Image (cartoon, rainbow, N blue to C red):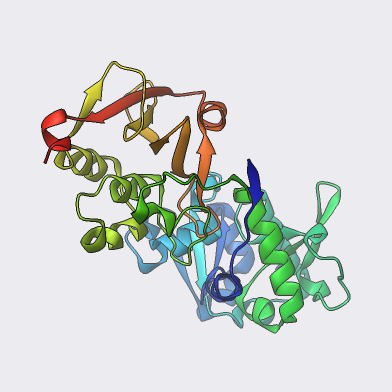
Length: 303
């Protein structure tokens, strides 16, 4: 049976506080840097390929600015204090905001996220592709009424994952019940971490793993260390299903709790809940990739 899930108020409060980083990032094409030359003494200009080695490549910054989505043509980044943007003359500020929209940067909300707009600062609103959007920056975000923040962050969260889930079954492993159909306040916790925690041999000591940002090789070692290996059998309770691309790179993983149900997390943001989902949902979501089944050996099952 489907159920509606909701983040707790304290989780929403953390999302409001953490989702907009402490400094503003603006992405530009190299030829556009000269347009803002007179303002750059108060900011850092960073080649984008250096961003990956900086503190601005931490998982929350990556998630907030959706850096994976930004056009490759935008090869420079302005890093600025939150008050810097208001030092720009209005036409230059609007031009820079339009560049962020063109780049595909995160932290740009359609005005439809707000039921009321009277208290939105007009200088952060632009018209783009026949709709009005607001460019979210730290200073303006923190000055918005809390009701505006809550409404917007909830609307934004549901673009990542809807709040409909499958009811938690009675036979779910005890260590997963705490997390099933709940939200996180930790950026980076992803599907691979959820599976490693699901298959952990000592859940009490290994609970911290569920909040980690896990990559493929770490995941492969973790599953192997838990006694799992590839099988050509149909999945069953206790199995791990991994979806791979044509190069054999893991794209997603989920843990079967039985009866065609899985303990699952669809992304690395705190907007992606740990959910109980059906096999049909997983197949539809990840149909571009090939599912592979991993099973714990009998000797490991017997301890």
